[in-house]
Image (cartoon, rainbow, N blue to C red; front, side):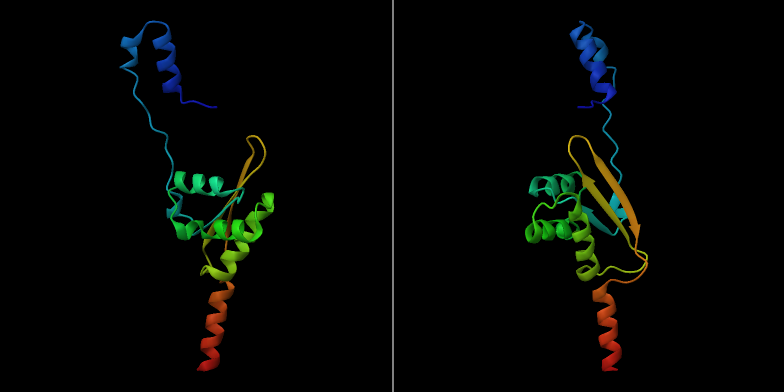
Length: 139
């Protein structure tokens, strides 16, 4: 498990009887960017409820942003890395995907494997196009 340098230095000084020096080492909180500012939809590997909840908690995502992952986990189960494609399909069909929106896909594998991709939507999702077509027919 990777530890921040500040924690490793504190531990070293405390073990070697130099605890007065540890007060001078600042505790640096890790920087976690606010992905919600540049990402419109999230596809988190549906490897289990704990995975979805853990990533959602760390990225500070709300229930609506976790819906594609939870929907996929409920309806398809843990389908390994293919779950992110089921989630993308759910976003396309049900989540007001619009042209220009960005979708972040996060997938996890065995051990320390993690892959991510950001997709740019080139056209509106099916529910947006369908609503537009129904409106044109009724006019």
